[in-house]
Length: 310
Ligand SMILES: Nc1nc2c(c(=O)[nH]1)N[C@H]1C(S)=C(S)[C@@H](COP(=O)(O)O)O[C@H]1N2
Ligand SMILES: [Mo]
Image (tube, rainbow, N blue to C red; front, side, top):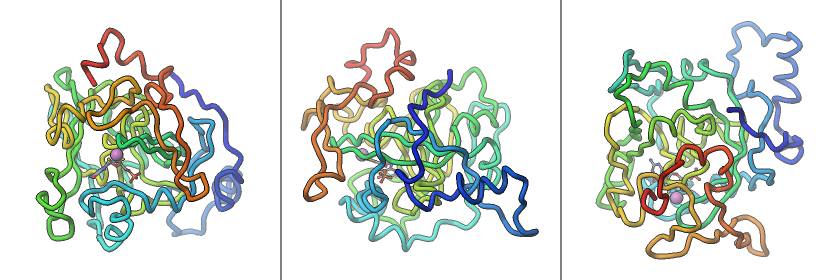
């Protein structure tokens, strides 16, 4: 299937410093090479931006200061205060393990060469019923997963975040188990909308948004978008996931955005789209099935009772 891009957003809608369509990428397209020895930032070569929402992205300031990253605090403002001091290991790698023909460990440079780096604007619907519109930069996760050549036994993909107890909260203080883990069914992980993000707003990910590399699954609640990934395992059985272990009735394995399946504590029918309004409190809007990506992803769940497999 191909991605339905509702439009290519005019660059002024996004940021006046969206360099790639203007300076850098244009120059590269016309054959001008960077000065010899200069390292080209793959983010500078991102192709045209695809807006998969038809909506205008939130202001950068909102997306980088209103976060969930329990390793750096349990309040929305905490990660922007605490995460910037964190020094991720210099040579970040992701290992591919488990039910694969070719287990391997790749560093970020290698990962960014696997597919053209893209910019995609997605809706981001947190399970807490707020939402944002975010311009990510990354590659399809499938490009990375294929490298390991998953065997026929690989039915699910399990992800693990980096965890350093000396620089991050304890599990006890955060109230969830660390390292943070997440999981997808293999065909969800291979879906072309599933993004391995390395940037946002045309720049590398700020620590609070999951530096240097995180998952974005736009038709699922935000907590499926595991941050600061170091390890990916292909497995036979549905893997444990952090929020499901914490409270299964509230946080299902699938966690597809579904206005018909309430959280035990609140309705999921509507969401607060943050950013607008007199005080930046946003506006209340209807939540869409699969967060508005029904046409692209409903086929993954045909025949499944989505109130049972929530
Ligand atoms: N490792 C880790 N990943 C995580 C979380 C977390 O606490 N730890 N929070 C999740 C939740 S609940 C959401 S809504 C998104 C938030 O991403 P953002 O801060 O970039 O908007 O990250 C998800 N990924
Ligand atoms: Mo969330």
